[in-house]
Amino acid sequence: MKKIKLFALGTALCMASLAQAAPTPKAGSSKISGQEIAILTDAPAVPPRITRKHATKVVVNLEVKEVEGRLADGVSYTFWTFGGKVPGKFIRIREGDEVEFHLNNHPDNKMPHNIDLHAVTGPGGGAAASLTAPGHSSVFSFKALNPGLYVYHCATAPVAMHVANGMYGLILVEPKEGMSKVDHEFYVMQGDFYTQGKNGEQGLQAFSMVKAIEEEPEYVVFNGSAGSLTGDNALKAKKGETVRLFVGVGGPNLTSSFHVIGEIFDKLYAEGNTDRPAKNIQTTLIPAGGAAYMEFKVNVPGTYIMVDHSLTRAFNKGALGMLKVSGDEDKTIYSGKMTDEVYLPEGSSMRNTAAPQAQAPTAKTKADRIKLGEGIYNTNCAACHQTTGVGVPQAFPPLAKSDYLSGSKAPAIKAVTGGLQGKLVVNGNEYNGVMPSWSLNDEEVANVLTYIYNSWDNGGDEVTPEDVKKHRINPVKHEE
Image: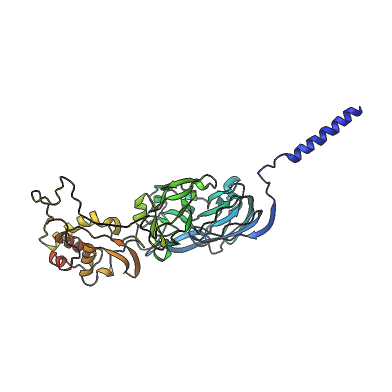
């Protein structure tokens, strides 16, 4: 009997010892120490990196506001927002943190709202616990179990309408090990907007559920409006610095083919994962309701264009931004244009007098000139300045009702024949881009400019070939 009791006691001690030595489960294992109020930022700013080495209680206060704001030049829209702007505030926490979330619906709002955070493990991502009427506040908590970059959005019915009105943002859950230090972090989100009026139609625009269901947006933009990341609002860095972009897609419908023209992503953390970067990536797909972040070193000064590489979205609907890099040039990495010479491949008829280049039709009347000019415009100009002449806000100046065309015809002729570069003010708005010169003969330049002068409430002037010859900058390269 004594041996049996000793055996039982030894077994119990052994089991207790094994229990103490067993690995601790991941879920709920992080010890919470202290409390802090979350730092929230508006895009493109990002809260500072987390340097603490322990989990803590983080209190997030996020206010829902329905506000009227700019969607494009002359176009306004009633946005539904997390924090007063689109996208919503950037939230940054750490793996293992306990988050106490306060969703406050401003009393001036007209709609109930909630929040679904893709970083939350639990039904609805917090949506059911956070449905909040105007003038009320809801509180719920969650534990950040999984590191990553996640989208959050409103999930109140009709969900697509709430998201299409701008109710989305990003929440970053840093891994316990932390994140490497970089020189700059920026926050960019793409969204598609469905207005009842066509792209460029002026005034306050209402939401179109018909267009949303058909997935035919009038605008596809970064950070809530066309031109939000261009001109004076462009992201900025210095040569030799490392940039980290946190990029999300609110949707509600479109996937982004995100690309930075002239850069390669040294590291790409697809789907927002934090531990498996791909290297040397040109373009990445980011789905609606998804996110990714990428890191790259800027080695050459200049302006880098961020686009959705579904390019009509970039150049016609607004999904275009800029990263301006300052510093000294390094010709060993990028030379810039070294020469510009005539290219005459074997068999070319460019300068073959036996087979002369076809002559442009000659206009006999002003009406002829307008008709011929329309074809030239649609072929050469409409992609940038649009078929309606309204241009693209912050990218390409308008030709419709343009004060640039109100005086002498000489500047317009010089622009077409010699190109433009640098700052230009049209209708009170500043543009800073490049317009190439066009290899059009005097007749063609006269025709296209006459079409422009006689469209979209411009002055109605006629430009003749003699006018073009007088003010031409670059001579025509081909034989006429």
